[in-house]
Image (cartoon, rainbow, N blue to C red; front, side, top):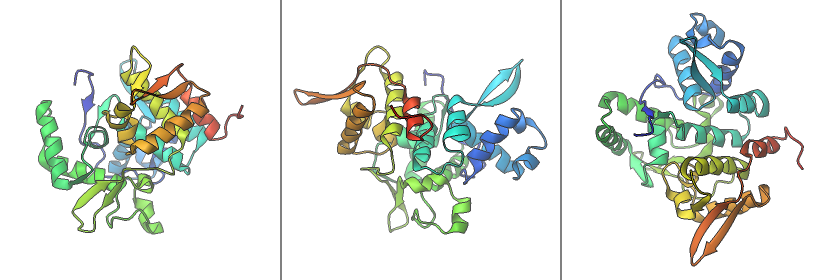
Length: 303
C-alpha cells in the first residue's frame, strides 16, 4: 500500500460494462470533457443516471479516460492510449486484441485497485467460489485497514464474475444476451464448473491474444518492476503479482512462445536466454510497444 494506490470496491453501480459503453464514454469525453459533470449527460449518453456513473467508472478504471484538476475543478480527458485505441485503431472494439488490451489496463491500473486486480494479479488459486472470494477480499481489506461492507463487497464480486463468466457458464450468448453482457466474456478467462458453484481460471494458451498485446504488457511489467535493470526471471513473469502470466492466465510454454515472438517483433530488443537451467528474459533496449500495436492494427506501414 506504500505506492499510494486507492482501493475501490464500488462505483460500477453493479453494472458490468456493456457492448458500446467504453466507446460511448470515450467519444463523449473527447467531444465534451465535462460531460460527466453535466446534468444533460443522461441525454447525451442515452442511458439512465446510474448507467452514466457506471460508464464513467469503467472508462476510468480501464484507463481510457483520466481525471485531472482544471484550475482546481474536476475534469476528464481521454488518455493517450484511449485516443489511439478507440479514436483510431479499433473504434468499436471489434478485434479480440482490443479486449485483451482493455483487460490488461483494467487489471493493472496503477492508481485504482479493484477486485478485478486482486483476482487476476494477486489471487493465485486456480479455482474459487463466490464465498471464497468474499473472504479473500475481506482479509485483504482488513490487512490494509480498508473499510468495506460485506454486503457491498458481495455485489462487487458478483459484478467481477459477470465481467468474465455468463450466468449459464458459457461464453456463447444469444444476440439479446450479448447486448447486456460484458465484451470480456469473449476472452473465456473464467469458467463455471457444472456444479454451478465453483469457477476456475482458464489457464493455458490464448489463441486470440496477439504477441503485440503481450509485448505491450511485457513492456509495462518491465517498467514497473525492473527499475534499475533489464533482466526478468521467467517464473516472475509467469507468477509475479500483476505479471503478464497471471493477468492473461498463461502456462509456461505459452509464455515462452510469446517471448520468442516478441523477440522477432522487436528485432532482438527482447531476448530469451537459459543459463544453468534458469530461464531469463532480457530487454536489451526499451521498445516502442504502442508502435507495435499500431502496426498490428494496420495504421502504420510495416517496415
